[in-house]
Length: 194
Picture (tube, rainbow, N blue to C red):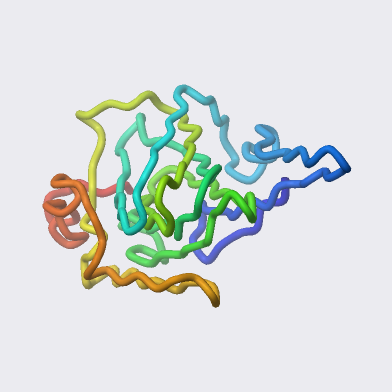
């Protein structure tokens, strides 16, 4: 797989090798050694997750803290998402900045997300399936959210030409995500990664 560095240190867009023939294709979706080489640490996969979302669902910004801070590898196997990575490390030069990428079943791209970064996505189609390889088991005591509509972060929806439009006024969010703290509130409470 090819890992393209983003503007956020610790986040890479994965562009897998696609081997096509008359039967179809095989994708080398994830290569552990490649991920560990760019991360500079061991990526032990402790849990795999899959979410299924309607068009317009906005999930996140989710993150974890401390020694249980998770590394994630995210792919979209059905439909499409606009995937966001937000730098939540208050000592980072890109603190509060974000990057995004279109992940879809069609383009087969993924996102590798290092420790200390927040993750969110906007589902662009009904029945969109997103898969996650995660380095830590889910622990509700160590799982946090930042409000994805926080004006200080100012996520924006930049969709490829021809993609039906969505805007943040129409998104569907969980109760937890819609009531999440802002970046500044989380910083003031000491709830951000270092």
